[in-house]
Length: 332
Image (cartoon, rainbow, N blue to C red; front, side, top):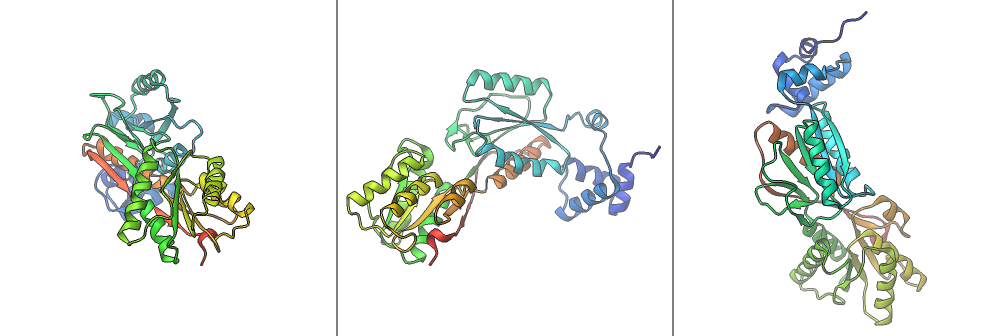
């Protein structure tokens, strides 16, 4: 029977000390990325499998992390989970995903369950970017909030820079020569809708351009997009571009405008928000959209959680910029 590959053999192949190899595989220490990658490649080449029980006894850690979400359909939590797994996989850590379904009692139940499993840390996320009350006070393990944020400034929160995304959308429309720009978005009481609308208005004002119409607030749905198109058409608004607060709104608006005989992007250029593949690819024509980089937020949250587990927490709110993905709906 073949003997199991040891950490010493991995270290020898990677040309590092056993201690460095251990840190690289456990996600600890301030190592250079190339060193960590070299060790991981050596471990993979040799077929090294860490002994979880031995690691736990040696370090006092379980190498597991909990993720509590309120996003039942997984629209936001799944990309965040993928990003977190990318970061935690380097340290061979596992994630327990718990769906609290917007139920505070269920959330606290899952919190107790994760503590009973002695997780090393917890990531809290959801389907909205609004700030929420801390999941608990004086908890025994580090907690990082991802996509959503905590109302406690001492907590670590990793969030999308939605204002930056809106600015990118407006600047893109201005760059392709559009000057009569309208904004159609979700509910006026919704954090994301107000943040994106304010940033859009400020960006237009900074360029000396007046909005073609006052911001149209409604719902995060294709039905609202179709209704908003009807409003724009019935009022005779002189519009050559629309920045939509979500891809769902943009898709509905595109459908209604096309049915009314408008050419996209010839008559009206469209930009959405979220870069949701189902929507941007299903839209006719394919939709230019702002991507919040949810996987990147998940990776950052996991990396900050690892740092906190290792004794170097990063407090406060950390906003990550997104990127604009141009497609046919704004093609010049």
